Length: 256
Image 1 (cartoon, rainbow, N blue to C red):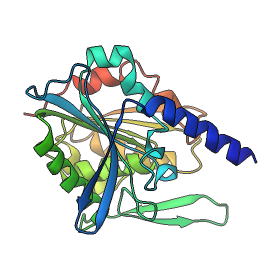
Image 2 (image 1 turned 180 degrees about the vertical axis):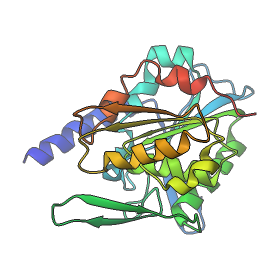
Image 3 (image 1 turned 90 degrees about the vertical axis):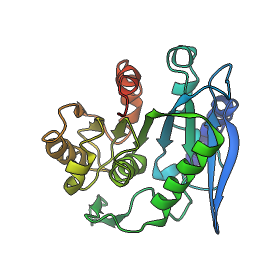
């Protein structure tokens, strides 16, 4: 009963905050990627805009094209954000039986989740679909190719690390909340400034995954930042979203 109440509460939040997000889908061969897009106020199709891609967590997977807006979509709708950072905002939705990152997942007897991040970035359809989607998006909208950004939480944080590793020349900056990746990607990731966030008491995605990535990435890029939320569990995105410096920091970078 409590789950149903929570579900309907979250659904009402999605409806409230998602009204300005247009509903779209990208189709490639037999695969469909639902996504929501928020255009800048007074959008001018002849003008180039920055792009922000946000990757949701595992709980928001599906094909309803709504759940991915539960966490974070409100940030980009605020009057302050839209005035300071006019940008094209995109929330793709990962298919229910897929994952944003090519990671092996296991659960211990203590119900702790263990993740093994692939060292070699081989063919992975969901990541490939994201790349194709971004390329298609650039055909439909005038995007400032020096100001493309990405961020995500949990599974989306993992997907953020991996997609930037696969497309090291694409994004100008990235932020990853309670995610993780393979430290062997660190040198490849060095061309993109990262801000990493994680709660020290996260029992879903271990804090050690982000800490390990930071230690290795910092060796190659001094712009890499890491914020630890002491005593915070998996929902560290709630605290990260309150960081007043987050978007000024993200938008301060351009890709040369």
